Length: 151
Image (tube, rainbow, N blue to C red; front, side, top):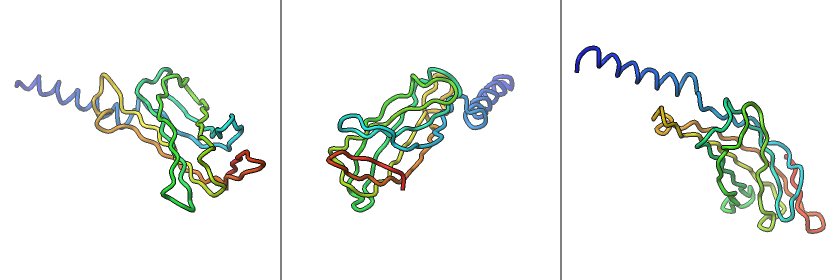
């Protein structure tokens, strides 16, 4: 390799590192987990707030699960899904947990957003952007209908 080719290679590696670790061009931020607002049939909806740097972010995934504090081996997991319809700026999504598997108790909701997809920069696949938030809820049953509130 000539010196010119090495400089170009090192320059490209430097741009990839700056893009991934400094600019965070594909970043989706998980801002907060809100209070459950509604119950849809047999499901409790937990709202989350997100902030995206651009529209139509492909490759970002949200995963969530609810763990019983009284019996930590009991975990109810929601289906992971993509966040490709998230708009630029702040947005809100609802995560649904089936209440048929719940017992009245204190539960911990964990939400993880992972983004590791970029056609241009392979460092997003090697070092994906991950944000995790956790919040504790008390789930009670009134007349067979489950309600959740932050503890």
